[in-house]
Length: 211
Image (tube, rainbow, N blue to C red; front, side, top):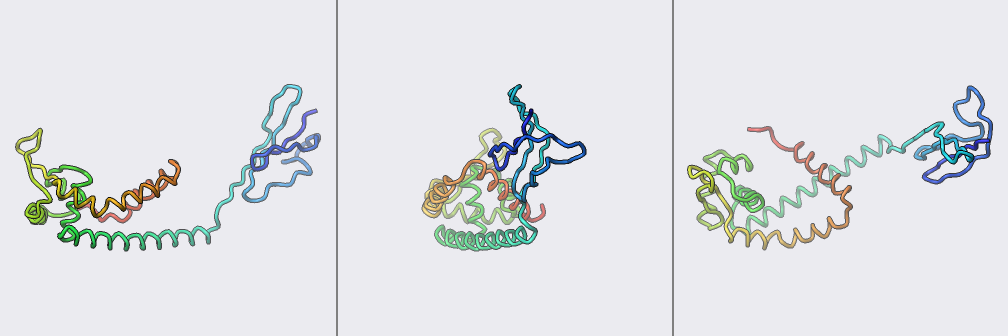
């Protein structure tokens, strides 16, 4: 005779063999699973050494609407705190470089991305061509950027950060980047993927409309 087996939370436990009754949706005497417990009813044939799935009932535990709202609000509060911290960091960095916040945005893009055409840089920092020209003049006088001909298009000019800019950038952000690397080492790749996707989607959500 075939015996019924219940798999609960990843563990198999044999249930006394019974004769299934016609018209019944589940075995008599087997209590339905509570919320958050996976219950799979299987039919095991000891003579043929195989397991036949008879019924699969999965009940996942989801946070209540109240729990979800509470956690969402806490995440948003943490994001606001993080934004305040980053704003303070940018202010300190601008003072260290001896530039204003607009010029610092240009430097941040150039040191992290590499050489760019002025039009590309203007789009990245959301400045008009006139506003960018003024910022580049200030940065060039401070020896933080230089302009040169494009390697593959002599009619175009590219802007790049100088060695001085990279050195000051390391002074300001080097220790912070090292702490961040150590922090991220504690997370598994799947967790980092969730964090990356959340940050990408958050950045898109708060981005202003295209010019």
